[in-house]
Image (cartoon, rainbow, N blue to C red; front, side, top):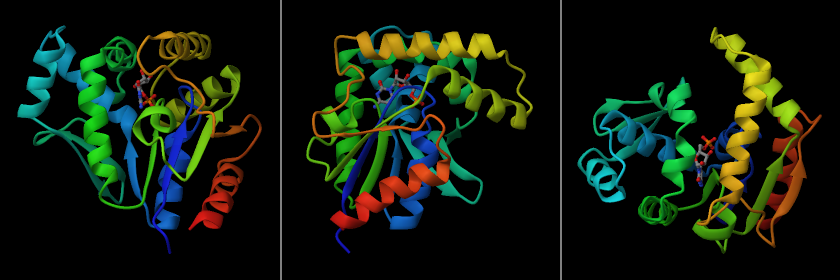
Length: 220
Ligand code: C5P
């Protein structure tokens, strides 16, 4: 089977990583969660109180971002430290947009993402995968869903994990992150011209996976 590249872009909490993980497993592709890399860079900036790109990058070089697949899901590390939970905290989520808008941080992380994609067939999810990171990807999906539905999905996930949250706060945070990600100067969230638009409002995870896999299999 041909090892293809699949780019999955879309707004916050549209289900990109959930479906990308399943598809990676089913089709034998590497899975790369690029949002986790921007989140890890944000954790580095907040923790060390760094605002300048060069300082953040230097710190990441000293403690590189890496991933490990386990039976409990994908773990994220900074150097030897497990930051899987830290990068999902509200503090990181509410600061990631300014860190990911810094051009030098993007150049650094995009180079790393492209290096990983050289290792073989890959499915990557993010905001600029189809437009910047993998412009020649065989399959590009732009996955969207209504803000209400995305907030409700996130609310249920949090409830299942025992994380207290408020639905209206989630809605406004998601809408605000979309606004910042879509309006930034460098690599804004944007559908690539050759991407397939998939609105998953009202669709199950299984339906979304099947839709993408059907198209992927035609290209493999
Ligand atoms: O996908 P996730 O919601 O974890 O991404 C967190 C943040 O990282 C996004 O809101 C966005 O600011 C940034 N990001 C990005 N480019 C990517 C992936 C994520 O700017 N390719």
